Length: 297
Image 1 (cartoon, rainbow, N blue to C red):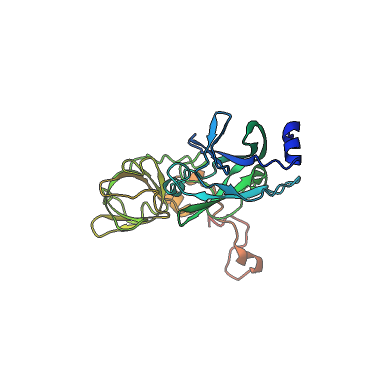
Image 2: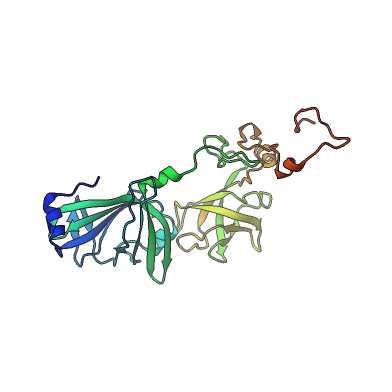
């Protein structure tokens, strides 16, 4: 149950016109921002809520059950607040957000209306629209494993246990040219077979994207070096001379796990699980029907 200060409640009941909304946003890297729809800055709890961002929010949908409380916020992209480069690079992904109703003439009179995190962020024509997701969203997450032929782990995680820095599975390279937002030509990778880094990842070491991660879609021979296609364009422009460290890719199939990485003991899929055709299967002459392992036949 939401508790409201009696003095604030009295002002709300009287139709006071000194009410505004404030949003505190805390990114996962620790950076904190404050926004308000008031025409002047509002400050409380060591945070200044800026009025120059054009921030606004739609009504909060709140329930008493397990449905997800949600809302949306819109505003202008600006260097002082939510800017396009930070959105593109994912710095605001799942940022924590608090939504307050505040009497701007008495900021101590306020009530917390919503706590959650950023969901999908859309941007266009110098503006952004952010989906705000409530705390109960976590209760909708699937729990448990799905039985399937492919592996359900990420290469190098605590269950996979493969060392991504093992010799022959990672390398530093340098950009020769950036031919598009998602395609680069790189030098220093000719010692690896084409496709070795497909479905892998890379970390930018230098340049405007230093420290950022990216997922590799395609790894193939290029005109002057190795052509690397990314799934998503980096947040900032990639330039010739930018360096990155790239890691081998895994398609999560049993053959790749055993043949490429020699890591089949840690494979987390079920390669011999029957497919949909098994439901309609029937015995045939010449087939083995002794209940033995399909893999050891």
